Image 1 (cartoon, protein in one colour):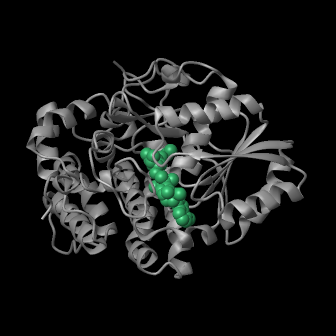
Image 2 (cartoon, rainbow, N blue to C red):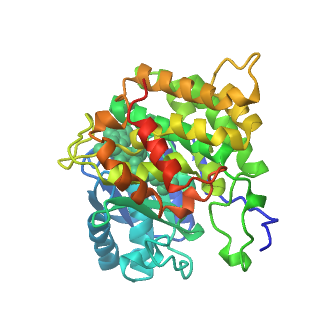
Length: 425
Ligand SMILES: NC(=O)c1ccc[n+]([C@@H]2O[C@H](COP(=O)([O-])OP(=O)(O)OC[C@H]3O[C@@H](n4cnc5c(N)ncnc54)[C@H](O)[C@@H]3O)[C@@H](O)[C@H]2O)c1
């Protein structure tokens, strides 16, 4: 079994700046696209972001129809509706205006409208068949309104499979938007918990990609076309991930606590994209893998600011609450790297030994979680000892990410990690 010797670096083009949404129509037209489906959700359809995007498209002579049926944290059911809307229209391009839920829904709609197939066809194995996307998609333009998932830079789309009670996804380079328009004017209106959860997702993307299994420890693909999007930590993704942690450490609390702080919001939108470039190539690992059943098995938790009738654990919350236990567990695999991550997070590492790294990351993250006012662990979301086996069972099939853990985690290890995540302080 030979080891990987190469890594690649792929990302979307990025246009950053207050007001760049006004340039959207011009970029769409330059690609020869004259008719698009604009995808958003019902909260945002009346927002300035959508109004500006529509005006810009029309001014450039691009005709559009709007699909506003995106569901927060998309499901197999909500994706099917979006696919039908996309298929019915035969669009030459797609514009996503919204958070990660909207951008991911747009990717999936564009994929299955172009290459119709049962939903699990392109979904990651072992949950889906994991077939590669057969060819290119019509161009996708993404205007994120959260900071954020970094989905505007990645070839990944995540959804909640309601029958399995677990999140899963599709990962292929063809899903990557051609252009992400990062307009910090749009993130001003994020409800505080949305800013907090999406910002903590940035922190975890960056920490997990920086500490992921190094690419050269993966098994080599049978041929270059089989090289996964998530390849493991590598020298280029490290640069993006490390800088994203630095920005989030400096600006996340400011952006949450004062939405009028333009400097902080702009920095967090950049951090979101930078972390997206890092994890979109290196991958994430256990905190994300464990988050999928936490989100999927939710029974009654409702998050203020998330307008949904169904119980919901916001994605960033489900990831960060597992993170302290995860980094305590993974740190021994590469203490120096974890110590560097702790320092980037703002932990006082003076005089610390490498073996202190896991505890330093964990205590810094717990202090951040408390300061932001998130629940005290999975128990506060309604989980208990009796749920541990099911949480483990929901994590084990998430190979795409769990195999990138720098320290392999058995079912018993995962049970311990979930147990430690029930209460953080
Ligand atoms: N594809 C990827 O690479 C990737 C990465 C991370 C997360 N995700 C996925 O993204 C989803 C989470 O996305 P998210 O955290 O961006 O949130 P979201 O898209 O689910 O939005 C959350 C809520 O905030 C509202 N909202 C968003 N922006 C707003 C704004 N500017 N003003 C007012 N309201 C606003 C939305 O209408 C929605 O009600 C999850 O499904 C997660 O699994 C995908």
